[in-house]
Image 1 (cartoon, rainbow over the protein chains, first blue to last red):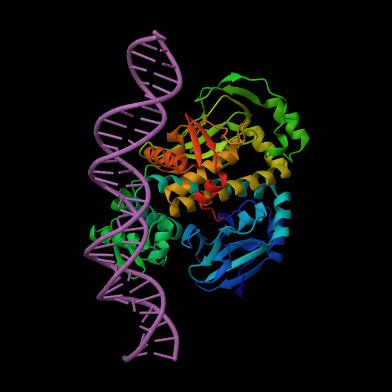
Image 2 (cartoon, rainbow over the protein chains, first blue to last red):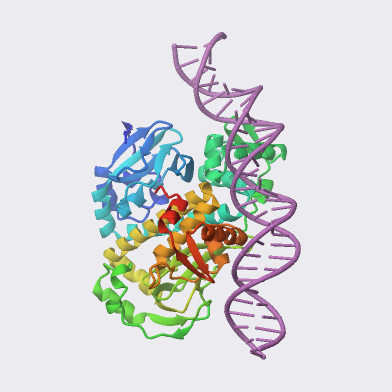
Length: 238
Length: 238
DNA sequence: ATACAAACCTGATAAATATCATATTTGCTG
DNA sequence: CAGCAAATATGATATTTATCAGGTTTGTAT
């Protein structure tokens, strides 16, 4: 695990992401302690924050940037389990179960990530019931999302899952100033690895979506020109 | 939600599943309070403990029996997300997120299930950090399992997933006295709904496993006659 | 015991998707 | 800006898996 350069970020109490993070209800005194002991780093696009199989020494909290949490399947092919954004914490699972990381975290663009040492975080967690409850809420929500993904992977065709994935990326990272372009640059392979399909299938279906007037493609930029049709294509019931 | 008959079960402090449950480190005083307020019921095979879409009024803790947690996909086909056994709690996700149930729980055989009212459980959870930490650990472990399932569903062929599923059912419910027969009676359709495949495919592959000398089939009984070969067929790396 | 529905099984076929092969384009690096 | 590797694109084909159709068995209620 090669840490990036040190970064200057506002202290935790005044962090712009505080109230949209798992720390939203944590005691202020605890945030002050976290602030004193946290170490923030810059990770360049493509850099690894933590790696599948390594031990967890602490919790990461994203201050800026986008990153993916992914796992390598037995045959070496990647599955992207989660996309994370500022305010999100990552690496909590290995921390809580005391296992090695079961997935890796890689920066999708330049990131500021704060590191909170394991012992400190666990100590605070034990004493701060508001933080605990919030973390449980987050874990439960996360579990719900993965279960929904599992259900769709088991039952829905690739076409619907790709449409759903585009909506998911849009929900996670939002749109650019034009109000149409998804604010994230992912390779076709990465998109395929979220959908759970072959790269060629993802490429082919994106072309179809383009021909159907649902999206426009320009390199890695995806403009959603017909959002309603995209939602209908995703065929979401729940 | 139609509750079953009232059941007589030992009190929580002396419950045989106490130390293999999420309550293993909970304060004894809290267990006493839970015990006073819990309501235990008998559910017959096939009965529903809670139903997708309903509100959660409390937590269920399994005292005896087996049950499945499943979700209905958009087309009505079932996906089995989890198999639960004595000592397990169910319905915690909806309780913590304040959402409706996103899945249903159905008894696979006759069950004793204890009900702990929502407010009581949440109150205890806030005050008992050992219980909180243990619940977070459980949620994290559950999340890890679902992520592994997701990875395999995305990347492994049905044959391998079926073999893995048989091993999973064995791990969950153990073997009968003969040391070979899986101690659970699931329909072929239910097995298929764990694997994430069509019922016919599951049936066909079970027949193949039988021809290959891996298992013997007798109605819903499955005897694992060649465990090593089953493990190899599952092709598990992690 | 008989009747009947549900579950199970098997074969034939169709559909979905992956894989392979091969251009073409893009983005980078010297 | 030339050269090159990586990413993207698309067609052809193979493979996997689902679906459909028709049997057989099993379990259960009368």
